[in-house]
Image 1 (cartoon, rainbow, N blue to C red):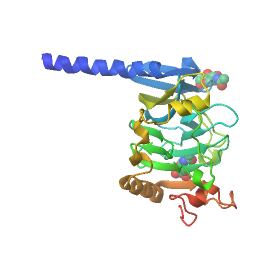
Image 2: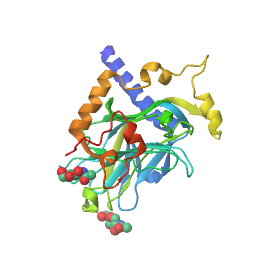
Image 3: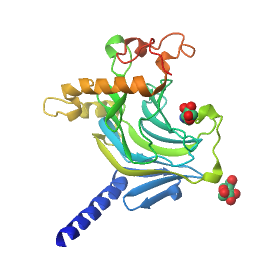
Image 4: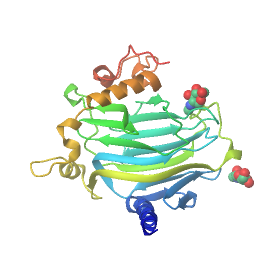
Length: 296
Ligand SMILES: *[C@@H]1O[C@H](CO)[C@@H](O)[C@H](O)[C@H]1NC(C)=O
Ligand SMILES: *[C@@H]1O[C@H](CO)[C@@H](O)[C@H](O)[C@H]1NC(C)=O
């Protein structure tokens, strides 16, 4: 009996810790009245009045950010739920996950994008190997001086490699905030914008369970140079994400990425010759990109 009580109290404490964590790390950016706190769960609601979004209180450089998210159940057509890191200003950097809703029974798509010095246009799109509306799954962004890796349940789905030695800029000099939001994007999100949001199915709800930020926190306000210095490993300060083994995917992860690309890829800007007659520079040199690959 006392053992069961112990387990029960333990669960309560875990619940409290997790829900405290949102307030510790994040704050609503807009539409506070579209936030629902339910025990350990945080729900963001989209209806015909508003979506909702939140952002981290701090900025970060390098490390890993993970959310545990369950996407909108049933009809989610026209809606986008986003999870991203971004710096500020006209030459900002940004790493994006965008979850594009669909009609009931049709699969969500996951679009990723990378902005460097204010320029994006690096979309990739894939479908998932599970239904992201049925359960919580982890979505992570890992970032160090060598690479940016997008992960789903620890499986890498995309790598953006540092190719500065080829003269290609890499985002490693601006601290970034962590953001998530849900909004209406029925002009483009679902089946190319052909399927509109059906407001009779509102509210559309994205549910969050846990947030982890294991990254170098930069005091705000702070200059980029100071952040870059503080967050770079030095003689007496070694950050875990700077371990040599994390400078590229390991063999197992490379195989996982190849599997994802072979089986789940819907679109890759690197292979879009109509849109980019001249192959984007990073695609030429990128080990995981190839113009020969055919996606179907
Ligand atoms: C939003 O939806 C509600 C419920 O369907 C409806 O009563 C209301 O008129 C709508 N408001 C707007 C601004 O469309
Ligand atoms: C929605 O479902 C359709 C039909 O299965 C599919 O072609 C499309 O890629 C899916 N995702 C989006 C965002 O439209």
